[in-house]
Every structure is written in structure tokens, then in C-alpha cells.
Picture 1 (cartoon, one colour):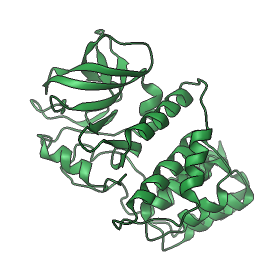
Picture 2 (cartoon, rainbow, N blue to C red):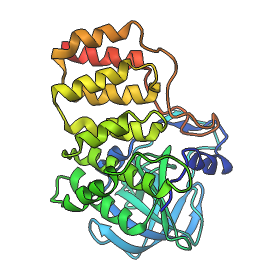
Picture 3 (cartoon, one colour):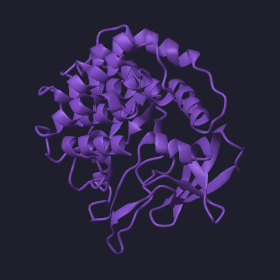
Length: 322
């Protein structure tokens, strides 16, 4: 089990013909799953960049059984920021390769993925690993297919208000979050992967029971990815202690702006009216520098919106006035 570095997927996209100024705002994984209707594993039979991708169904994992072959011909969460004539959104799948897909039926009776760069995960058959997204397509990990299917099936059921089991997830979290926060060295990547998946699953399912462990990961300034996942997973703890922890993180000059915005978003879930004065005090000195996922400027996801720390704080304060 290995972690896939942040920029690899961006490089894969740019290596195709996406440097033509067609760009979009990439959705987060929870939105992708919420809006999907099927979760399947398929083999690409034919790919046409413009017309779509024909796949053979290998496994119907969640949702009604689909025909043996289907056509993916559109996108269900594609919000374009710019468009270049003759170089619109394309289907970039390799024939003969296998992918997991989150699908939705379109008005033509065919199927959609969320965007050209999300709503699917490449399955490397030779290495027996999945290029998995738990947070956002900018942030991916290499995952064992059994773990991937179990966790994504759980998320599908959760986001569709269906019954689901949590024991597997809490066992995973107990196994990995009781270890020291891992980094990116070769000897650490197996643990880092497990910790990433565990914390992101705690975020999605809003599962408690790991507050003490998450505080250690939030304070791990050597690894931004650990901090992001921990800040997201803390949304299960609407307590004075957690609110203060998040406010301290937002004020901490050693924390990255991206991490601070995630902390603000988590804090906003608590409707922290009682902390309004402390939040107001943070605004004046808050960073107003452009913030986001980084990556290559030729990446078509380049217009994915992410606020500055100052604007995120102002938005939080505005919500407290409502």
C-alpha cells in the first residue's frame, strides 16, 4: 500500500491534450458520491475523446444491475470556467484498462461521470492497486482494491441515506491513528496511507472516538496532508475544547493557509456564535493571499475555487449574523 504524491494526477492530466484553456471547478468527493447513482468496476472497450467511453461491466458494486456494456457520454457535475472551441471536455481513458466509476444516468439513457478528471479511479491490475480519491482529485492515494471497495461502498450508502456498517472503519482508524503521524519517506508510506484513509472516512461519516489522536495529526506541521485530514475529521466534536483547538490553529503562524481554511470550515459546522469575538479578532491579520490546491497552471482543474483565510473568516462571521 502506497501513497500517491499530490502532483502525479495533475501530471497525468497535462500529459493528455488538456492544455487548451478549457477549465472547470472540480467537485469534492462527497459531492461526487452524493450525486451518483451507481458504483461499478468496468473495463474500457473503446474510448472516443469527444463521443464517450464504452465500458464492459466487470462488477456492479452498488446500485441496480447495469447492462453488460454501457456508454459514458457526459458529465453530471461539470461546471466550466472557460471553454476553447474544438478542445472541450474530453474522455481520457485507456482502452483495455479497468476503472472504478461513480455513474449517473443521463437524459439520453447513457451514463455520466462527474467531470473528465473525477468520479473514477484507475485500477492497476498488475500492481493490484487503485488510484483512489477520498478528498479531492488533487489529493490521491494508492489503495488496495478490497479497502477501496469497502470504504467507497460505505460512503455510497451513507450519502444516499441507506444503512451502512461502521465497525470496519473504526477498526481501521484504531489500527492507524494510534501510531505516530507518518510522513512521505519510503518506510512510512504504508502507515501514511492508512492514516489518510482512516481520517477521511471519519470525516465523511462524522464518527467520534478519536479526538485525542486527531489533535496530534492537526499539530503535525511537517505534513500538510495529515493536518488537512485531521481538521476535516474534527467536525465530529462540537465541544468548547475543539472550538478552541481550531481557533488556535487558525491563529498559528506555522500553519499553512490551506489547513487554516479547512479549520474554518470545520468550525463553521458548529455555528460558533459563542466564539464570534475571537473569530472577529482573527480577521485583521488573516492572510489574504491566493490559496488553493497548487499544481500545474495548465491543469484544467485550475479554476477550482478555494478561498483565502481572510475571506473564509468573513464568510463564517456572515453566517453567524443570519
